[in-house]
Structures are given as C-alpha cells and as structure tokens.
Amino acid sequence: MAGKKRIGIAIDMTPFVDIAFLLLIFFMTTSSFKPPEPIAVRLPASHSEFKVPESDVLVLYVAEDGTLAIQEGLSAQQSDFIEVKDLPTYVINKRARNPRLRMAIRADKNVPYGVMADVLKGMQISNTLRFNLVTELEGGGMFETVEIETGAGGH
Image (cartoon, rainbow, N blue to C red; front, top):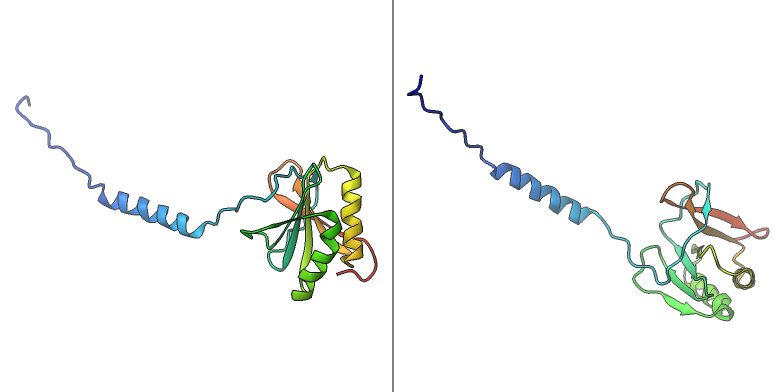
C-alpha cells in the first residue's frame, strides 16, 4: 500500500467565472441608480401605504433653511431652484404644458411652519389643491406618500 500514488483531481473553473461575469453584467445593466437629490432633506415618518406616482410628477424639495428646488419626474437629472413667491407661476406654467402633472412635496422634517405655510399658499394660488407629501415609512427605509387634498375639485 505504500507504493500507491494519489491521483489529483482538477476542476475546471472557467464555467464558474463565465456565470459570475454574466450575473455581474446582468445586474449592472438592469439596475437603475437613484440620481442625487438637488437638496438634501430628512423626511418625516408616517404609516402611509400610498406610493409616489412614477410618471407625470412635479417634485418640490423644501430644505430646512427654506430653499426650494423643483424638478419634473422622480429621476430627473436637472432641477430648478426657485423662490417661494415664484412657485405659483412655475407650477402653472408646468401644468399648462402637461395637464396630467401631479405634485409631490419632499419637505425636510425640520422646515419652519412659516415656510410650509408659504409653500401651501403658493399651491393654493396655482390651484393645485391636491398633492402628495412624501414621507419615510416608519421603521423602514421605503419612501411613501400621504395624499392631501386642500379643497374641493382639486387637481
């Protein structure tokens, strides 16, 4: 038995490497990365189960210091910084180009009441009586919205 020699087993790793690269390419091409937000906001928490619309949405960002940025679409690459006094005109112009446009507001949880009152007044002037307030799902990381209607016959 001392003269018996062991035979080595060689496993070809080429198919394994091919599969690993195919999976890598698949996930790289099918995943979409979230573009950076124009203004960093910390969203308030809620228990809402309503999802943000994927298309025909105008997103208004309200920073803690009162800075406003607005963009058309959830994954828009470009956004405009506006003043509160210009909000009604901006929204009216955007909705004139796209009547199906819905409004979503992503406001920081520490925005002063006066700033939000001015934003809501601008929404009322532009006759945008129905909008979504984007919140973070309590206990989780998913973003949800609370749909708000501020008057009868809203858009």
